[in-house]
Amino acid sequence: MKAKPFIKWAGGKSQLLKQLRVKYPKELELGFIKNYYEPFLGGGAVFFDIINSYPVENFYLSDINEELILVYQVIQNEVETLIELLQAYQQKYSGLDNDKRKAYFFQIREEYNHSRFHIHDKNLSPDWILRAAQMIFLNKTCFNGLFRLNKNGGFNVPSGNYKNPTILDKSNLINVSKLLQRVDLKVADFSQLEKVITTADSFVYFDPPYRPLSKTSAFTSYSKTSFDDQAQIRLAKTFNILNAKGIKLMLSNSDPKNVDKTDNFFETQYAGFRIQTVSANRMINSVSTKRGKITELLMTNYP
Image (cartoon, rainbow, N blue to C red; front, side, top):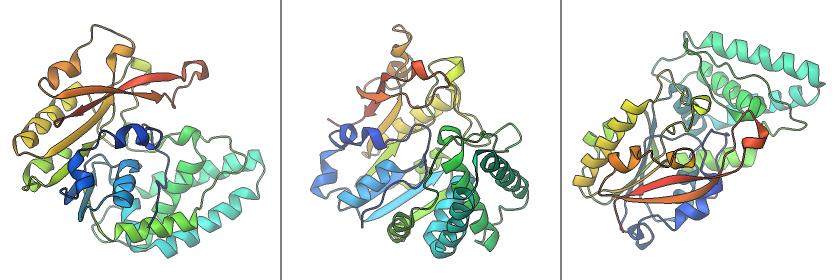
């Protein structure tokens, strides 16, 4: 059941999959990995690659971002109703000129931000489905597909300029929904893995908000809480705790040496582990001339 990410996400790994596949633990292809965990879910490119390609039995996906997990849960449980709402958005948006498209975008954004004050109960409801449709619409029509919140938790990305955005990809959403029937989805901090993973036949992929290369590149506000250096250090401690249990681990992050050859932050935090680089395109930057090839880091605890 082939499926792919249904939303754009800052730092998404679709472009890096060919490089990441050769870095997966060999036990994954041999069928020895029974459980897959991804605690920074985002667009889920690595999850979709693994569930499409490897004989893993159990999948546990989580993120601290409540809005993101809400959308996944709606696709998991109410995909047909979601498709109907997205189809209406697609038809409405496609029939408008540029000025009216911008006005429509800001109307939906205002509705989305207003509903956040009363949406997060524990039981899936029609309000959840509408909010999921609004988030996907905003993601497909906002500037660069960013998900960014202000200090009050409001979505504040401006509208993009697209000729014919695909707001509804019906066949992919149906495939995603079918695959998600095999998945346990939760809103949770990554540190919860220290308690829930008990068997060594597990593989964890960490894709946290990247440590910014500069003050202007600090896209860390994907949830109500930021991800600063103290959070990065806390993550490294979780990495060490899980390593002691014999669990296979892979972690992506930025490479500070792109801008400062003396910055050994990650060499210090992941001393004793394998640190490699992969090549990536910097997709999100307000200055187009600064979008180019950079290296990213990949930390693993296996050969």
